[in-house]
Structure formats: C-alpha cells, structure tokens
Image 1 (tube, one colour):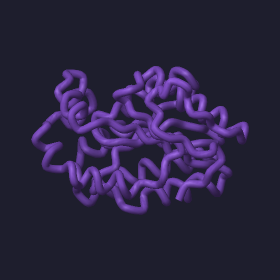
Image 2 (cartoon, helix red, strand yellow):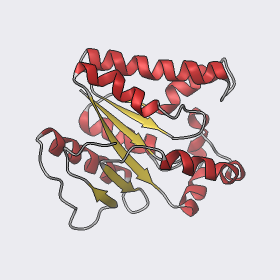
Image 3 (cartoon, rainbow, N blue to C red):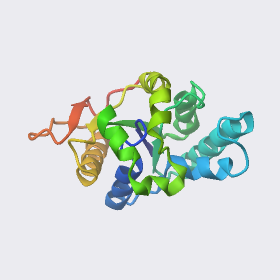
Length: 202
C-alpha cells in the first residue's frame, strides 16, 4: 500500500496533476480540498476545531486505506495551520500495516504562481485566489515547504505539462515497486532531481 503524497505551494498544479495521475494509475484521488471544504463548512479555517478535525479526517482515511491495502494519491499544500509532525503521523498511520509514503514535490516560480492564481478555475473548492494574500503569506508557505521531508521526485510544473508530470510519477512508482534505479529523463521533462527509488526519506 502506498500513499502517493503530492505536495507543493498554492497553484503548483497539485490537483490537476493528481487527476491526471489518477486517470493513469486508477488510484483514488484524496485531494487536499475535500476535507478542507467539509470541515470549513462548519468551522473557520485555522480555528482549533478546524485544525483538529481536518487532521483526524486525513489520518483516519490513511489508516483505513492501509488496513485494507488501498493505495491512494494525496495532494497537500504545506502551510502553518498544519501541525509540524503531520507527515510523521501519516507514516505512523500506514507503516504498521505494511504501507509506505512516497513524497513527490511539485514546484513553480513565484511569477507563474501569481499568474495561475488569477485563473477562473481556481474558484473551484475555494482555492487561494488573492495575489496580495499570497504575497503576505509567502514566507510562511516557504517555511512550511522547507520543513517537508525530502521528496523522492521533484517536478517543475512550468517545464512539464500535467500529463507529462503524471507520467513521470507513474514511472517512478513502477520503478520503485520493482526496486529499480531511476534514470534522469533524456530531455529533462521538468524533473529537477530523482533519488534511488528505494531511498528512505527523513
């Protein structure tokens, strides 16, 4: 069982890539906005009940998926309202059942990020759309990203289409399961770096 943990800053393309990856692999997509929107319908974003219930929903889903051997794709935007040990808790939720967490990072430049924030489709799921708010929170977002575990794969979504990014992740997962060595793509393909497929993350 694998949790394909796709993370990155706002507007990095996590949901779009996640949907493409779900289409390619047949894995269910448990994206960030599902639980955020459910809990946020009752409690204000960032409030104590919101933070507690959001994490409970996430972790209980991982536990049940691992218990039943159900791999999934999870998209996540690191930010200060998420508890600092969340990724450790995700591992602790799945590893007792033989599961593992595969961290995949999506990146985007600040200029492209701000351009994407203005796209009309970002109104879906109540995504961040304010460039001014993004600029005020950028340092906090960057600090949260810096605290994430090392990724097994990092993809620049400006240099790589969503379909290509999803194909890269699917290839990584296949190589990882086979215990093979990842090869850097000959044409770059937006992949910044890749570690050994069986490398442990911190």
